[in-house]
Length: 121
Image (cartoon, rainbow, N blue to C red; front, side):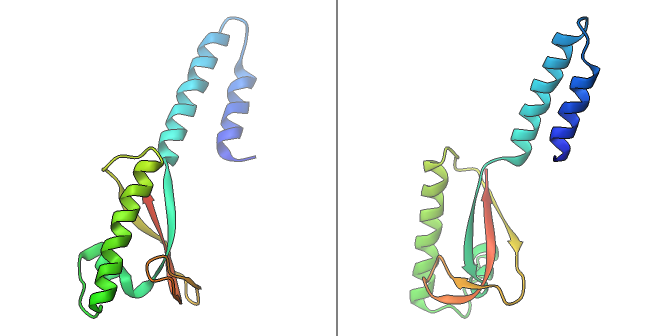
């Protein structure tokens, strides 16, 4: 049982005939807050050498082909977000940059040491 479920159980334990509607209102408000806190997101596995381009606009060291791939990826991310109900306002974070995290990069399609990038809205 996670903390949210524990809190809901706690609220339910406080429920009486007299405060039932109040407790239900609190539960509904709590659920709205939790849903907005978690938000919507999409995770991508990205080769670590693309991170400076994605987060700082630093394309030094990337070939012309790689720059084109990054630009195409960014366009696809915007499309993915909109197709999933998001808007043009989003942010990205590196959520896992662990060592030896080998996988297929979603920019180049090549095997490489990757970070997980989360785009949230």
